[in-house]
Amino acid sequence: MSATKLGSSKMLMLVLVLATLALASAGMALYVLMGARSSEAATAAAPEAPPPPPIFVRIEPFTVNLPEDNYGPRLLYTGLSLKVADERSRQTLVEHMPQVRSRLLMLFPGRKAAELTAPGGKESLLTEMRAVLQAPFSSTHAAPAIEDVLFTEFIVQ
View 1 (tube, rainbow, N blue to C red):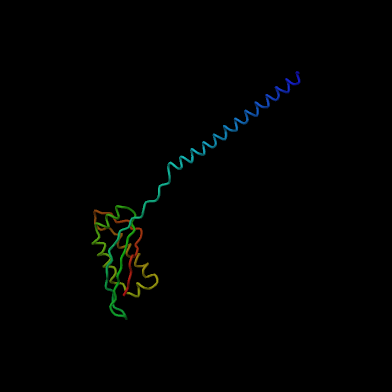
View 2 (cartoon, one colour):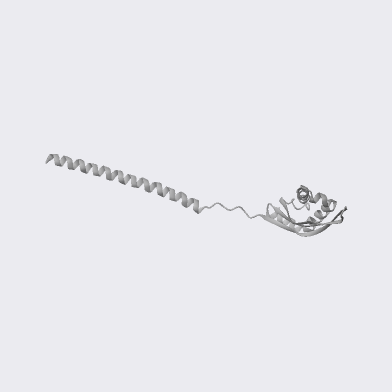
């Protein structure tokens, strides 16, 4: 009987050790899973803010006389949009739209149709327009932050 009691107590001890290991493993698995879920919940709770939408200022299309060339009198019909960095720049441009249009109208007549239709002609014109429009419109307003000048319409006749 003592051999049976000794075998039973070894068996009982083995079952207790295995049960303890199983409980410890289950506890560790729950800890790891709960930690992963809480980090997922924190990530889901604070999603990355989408970038702000771009701000555009539309300039109504206008027609400009260009110097005569071999084809006779020439015209430029163009429409523009300005991409600005912030709302302050948009407001400045809207408030000073007559000055914006005047500056552009003063820039275009010196251009020849061949220049505007040549490769790189539009790009150089865009660069000049950006420089002209980024100058302050008055001493009380800061210069607008213009990120890009975009043609929305462009016809040379």
